[in-house]
Amino acid sequence: MSGLTAISNATVVTPSGVIEDGCVVIGNERIVRVSRTADDISTRAVTVDAGGRVLMPGLVDLHGDDIEGQFAPRAGAETDPLNALAATDRVNLLHGVTTKFHALAFEEAPDDGRSLENASRLAETIERGADTLGDNRVHARCELADSSAAAVEELIEAVDVDLVSVMHHAPGTGQYDDESFKRHYIEDRNWPTDAVEAAARDRSELDDGNRNRRIQRIADLARRVDAPLASHDDERRVDVETMADHGAGISEYPLTLEAARRATELGLATVMGAPNLVRGGSLWNNLSARDAIEVGVLDALCSDYHPASLLAAPFVDTGEPLFTRVNRVTRNPAKIAGLDDRGRIEPGARADLIVVDPSPTPTVERAFVAGSEVLRAGETATPRIHSALENS
Image 1 (tube, rainbow, N blue to C red):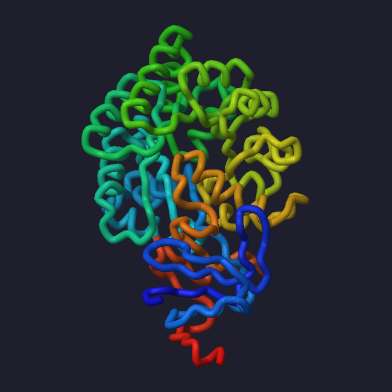
Image 2 (image 1 turned 90 degrees about the vertical axis):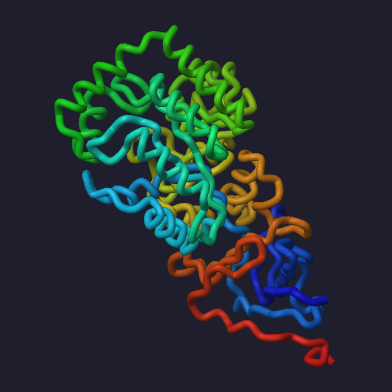
């Protein structure tokens, strides 16, 4: 057989277990075979010695807004969108993310670089995919405003939108009371006080009728492009039920155990931020990812704002087997997004793979996207041609 690469001497994490001293053979963008190294006799294959390190699927990140920080690292300091995408793509690959849903906020917040125009520019850049190595996709985060929905309506005529979520950041709803809303926008996002006060007034004036109308408008957009619809910051059972009625299949960042449990009961996938698990709790004292795991109501983790945490998350000891923790950042998010071709090490699956040294801190030494090596670092062995004569 020709055109094959065999990654051997690896701790291979499959969807249902771990193969010590395992070997994964890839070719034509797919996984061809999964076996034990001693049993594999691939001839004329380029071999990679993983040195006993962990071989797992590439991470699938459903929600990461780090491209916004690359695009506007400081207020008023906007960069070239192409440079922002290229930098974000490389940073994510260094942390094992081979499929990235860039969460772009369709929100007018010019004081910290967010605007409808900037979100559209970034989405168009991602669609072109110039100078990227990973699989980069668009997650449209749509604020509950008619202007935001109109911008996404215009966008979907030119860009493939792969995931749509509904967000409504207002004082007294979701994770913010009046004080924390002001603190977040003034201290974390550098808004002037008068802009925060204006946003608080505008967003607090949204009544239930207009809220449901705007949710439905966004839900219709998701259906039009056949993209999953996600809710955001569900706090109460009724919040989850409302979004489920509008067709949501994902509950992002449920704030309470009550909301996460209701999402699970209704068949919505629950997604929380990996930083929550890695740091040991929510930054805003909301539902702990570890608590959600313990009661069985957390399906997937995303990077949120920190790709390194997504790589670290499966190596946080939750009392579960390694493959269960890995599934939460690979197979499960792929399935949630409707990407049934990836996120698992099985014959026939897309060959998105990463070689990870888990200690002392998880680092990626090699990354493959659709069978092509796109990253090599660390001290794993140099590939060589392996022939049947060496086994004779």
